[in-house]
Length: 178
Image 1 (cartoon, rainbow, N blue to C red):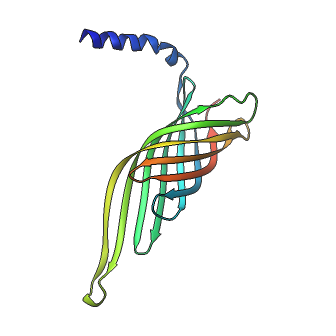
Image 2 (image 1 turned 180 degrees about the horizontal axis):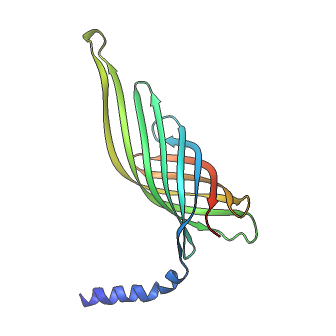
Image 3 (image 1 turned 180 degrees about the vertical axis):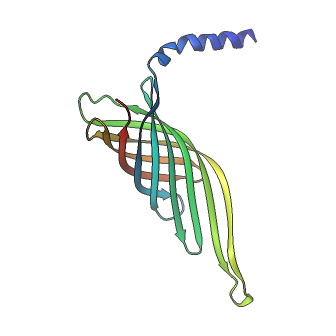
């Protein structure tokens, strides 16, 4: 027990500088649209809303909700993913382009549906299955400042997990506050 207390105290003391450099809170919001290429099925369009949660040390934090759906009769698959992503922005001086590397985690709420028709035997219907899956995201991209409040944003990311997918998304973000 004493060892645990000493370890926690040491971590608290050593991380004090990191907390001094944090600026956490809702700093902006935006939307992205683009190509989602799930493993094993054809590509589709994805929509993402996101919130800029500020910076912690040199990392920017972002929360997001991504939705995509693909239907190839008689099967339909959809994914609603809630994620948290950390981004490390590379220093480009006074350039308006801000490249970044990103990594994050997410919960994917996946639902599949199959329509069926028994033909000669009569009857038809739909059966479905749902699951919640954990995923890991790695990627990179860039932001480009349009003005003091708005920026274009683009990212290529790969999601690892039960539903693996490649996302190529672009959009716009709006900065809140000063």
